[in-house]
Image (cartoon, rainbow, N blue to C red):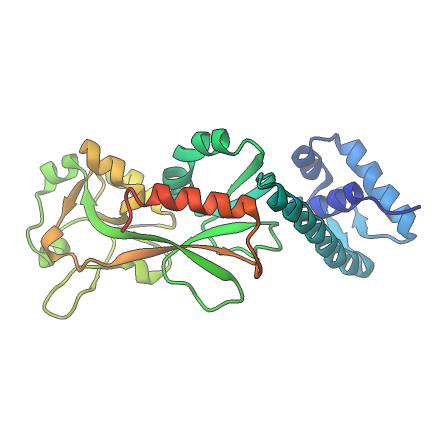
Length: 298
C-alpha cells in the first residue's frame, strides 16, 4: 500500500506540535483519528517512527530519517501547487507567517481583514515568537525580523525601516517632569530590555557619541510589555514607531528629546528560504504589508 500525502502531513504535524492531541486540533481531526493515521503509516512502512508513552513522544532513528524526507516531499508538493497558482495568477494555499508579538499586533493584525478580502484564496496562519526561529522546523513560509540581520542562508527582502523614539506617558511626565537634556535621563525611571543589551543603547546624541547607554529601573523581554508599562506611567521607554504611532497620535505617549535623537531607524526585513521565484501568495503578502508599512516607516 502506498503512503498518502495526508499521512505525511499528519506525521509532520504530530512531531511539530509535540503531541497527537495538539496535532489533531491543528488539523481539525480527533486525536483517535490522528493516532490511527500515524499507526497506519507505520504499518505501511513496516517500522516504528515514534515511540509513544503517556507522557512523551520520541522519534526513532527511522522516524528522524523519514521526517526529513517527508518535509521535502510536502515542500515539493507545495511548490507544485504554487507553480500552478502562478500560472493561473490566482494566489491560493496556506501562508505561514511568523513575527515578534509587537510587530504582529501593531503592523500586521490591523490589516488582516483587508488582506483576506483582497486575497480570499490565501489561508493565513499567524504565529508570534520573540526569538529567532528555524523556518523549516516551524513550517514557516516567511518571517518578519526587526533590526540588523545576521549572516545566514536565508533570503531577505527589505520592507522598510522604523524610527526609534524616546517616549513617556503624560501621567509620568506630570509626576516626574520632562527631561530637557540627554543627561537628565539619569534622574528618571527608565524601562529597558532584558535582552539583547544593544536595545538599551538609545539613539541619542551627546558629548561622547550618538548612542546613550541606559541603566534600566525595570526590565522586560518584550517590546509590547515595555509599551504597556510606559502607557501605565511606569517610566520612559525607547520603542519603534511602528508599534507606538497610534499612541503618539492620540497623546497616550509623548515623544521626548526629539532634537537629540540621532535618527537611527530599525530595519524591517522579510526572510524566507525560497531561492527561486517567490510563491505568488508570499509575493502578494510582502507587497501588501510593505505598502502598509510605508505609512509609518521611512
